[in-house]
Image 1 (tube, protein in one colour):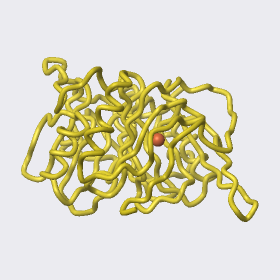
Image 2 (cartoon, rainbow, N blue to C red):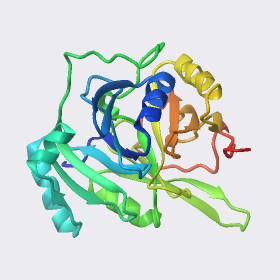
Image 3 (cartoon, helix red, strand yellow):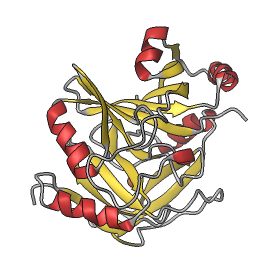
Image 4 (tube, rainbow, N blue to C red):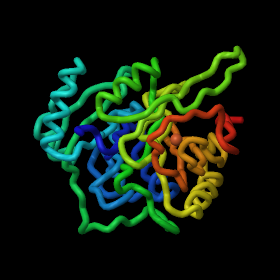
Length: 290
Ligand SMILES: [Fe+2]
C-alpha cells in the first residue's frame, strides 16, 4: 500500500541561528552538518540533515517532511490526494534540490500544518554522524524517522481522517478528564514502528508544540537533562514515562519557544487501539518562569 513511511525531516523557521547552533549542538548533541547564510542543517544520523533551521523570524514549524518509498509511491500519493480532494503543489526542481530530495510536493493539514511529501533523501554515508557534544549512545532514527511531533489541531477527528489518507494508522489514545466532567481527547498516528509520528489535540500555541528525539541510552536523557538544567532553557515537563509509547522523557524549551522532548525506551506501535486517562508517572508540567 502506498503511504508515508516516516517523518524524514523537519524545517523550523527561527529568529536566532547562532543561539540555535549552541542549543542544538552543545546541549542536545545534534551535529551541525552544514551552514549557509540563512540556514543550518542539523544531523542526528547519516542523512544530509534531519532538521533545517531557516532564519525567518517565525520561530515555528515551516515544514514536516514525510517520506514515501520511491517514485511509484510518489505518483500514487498524488492520485490518492486528488481522489480525496486534498490540494497539493508539486515543488520545482530547485526546491527539491535545496531540500536534498529527489522529488517533493507541499500541502497542509486541516490545521494548516505545513506538510512536505518527498522521496529520495540524500544520505551521506561517507560522513559518519558526529554528535555536537559527547554522547553515550546514538539518536534512534532508522525506520522510525527523525522522531515525533505534537502539532496544532482544531478537530481531532478531521485530523485523524487527513493523516489516514496519507496512509497512517491511529486513533484517540488519551482521554484526559477535565474539571467540567468532559474529557480532552488526544489523537496519535503512526506510519512505521515508531509508536507515533504525530500527536494532536492538546492546546498548542504554535504549529508545533514539541519535537521528540529518541536516544538509545538512558544516560543521554539524564546527561542532556543535567546540561539543560544548568542552562537558560527551562525544563517544561519533568522526567516521566508516557502510557502510550512507554517513552521515558523530559521536555525543555527551545530558543524558538516550542519544546524539545528527549526520550528513551519507546515501544513499537501496537497496531491495536487502546486509550489512557493519564501518564504512567512523572511528566509534571512546570510552566516556564515559575
Ligand atoms: Fe512527545
